[in-house]
Amino acid sequence: MNLIDHLDHLVLTCVDPVATERFYVDVLGMQLETFGEGRKAFRFGNQKINLHVRGKEFEPKAHLPAPGALDLCFMAAVPLEQVIERLQQRQWPIIEGPVLRTGATQKIRSVYVRDPDLNLIEISEPA
Image 1 (cartoon, helix red, strand yellow):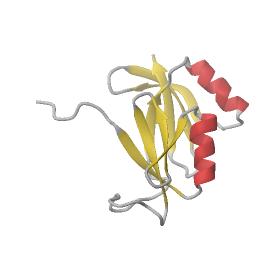
Image 2: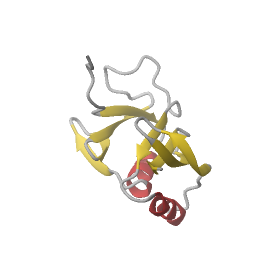
Image 3: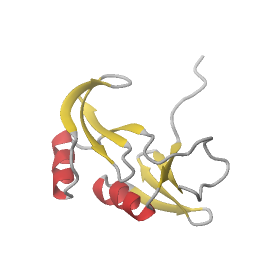
């Protein structure tokens, strides 16, 4: 029996919230959402990334919240060529790819970038 259906949100701890917002909103095209007592999140599809700033995290939080500790893979809503074009327009360096990888449900074609905190961000399309 599966107890878990899908991921609702995850929490990203950053050092510079302005640079982080620029990356996730301007570069990746996520929607900025403000909720609660001025908290911020980046919404995409039916999920979101809640933002914590190092040293000002909301409770409860991870045992060791750390900027740069994540390795995330996002499935693109557009062809990977359009993702690459947007990254180039925003002058955001691709550190690897396109390369073939194995995703959760199928083979994928991916590019890799780093966000402002050096988290590894993989952006993929079905292969």
